[in-house]
Image (cartoon, rainbow, N blue to C red; front, side, top):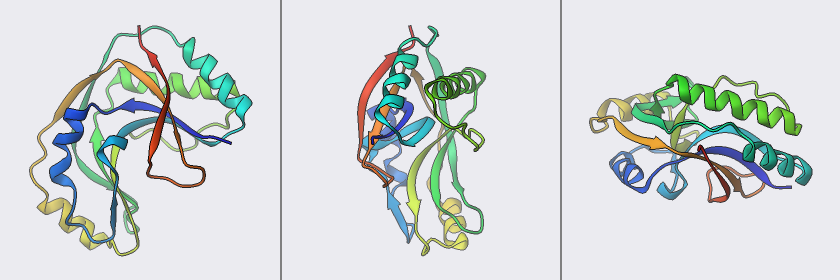
Length: 179
């Protein structure tokens, strides 16, 4: 069973601009810059038939204009039990609409509904137990100034990952241009 998700690829220049934020946080497992992406719909380990139906749905998605993407700062998920450090992405209406369309396509293909609220982001590191809330807060307060990073998304990618693990490496299985 392939482990799949849809997302937006991060251009190499933007990934390079995120490099200064890598390191300096005990307990962080840094994601390789080539694996940076914005997840639109995580599917997990799926049967081949669902994957095929998903690809058909993605190929039939409505045409859309490029979407302006802005990475606007650093944050973390997990609160008292931090689990990830990320670059926040501005949730502009066109991006939120794209994610909602991905959800509809995934459900039509037979996927269970996504229960988590869409929080667009680029995961920079997964955090182990050693990354205490205090260490994460210190890291965020002492990180270099985060100047907004901008690019235009022009397609959705279908990614696969090793089964039952997260954090890459990811393989781009197919791409679906907006227009």
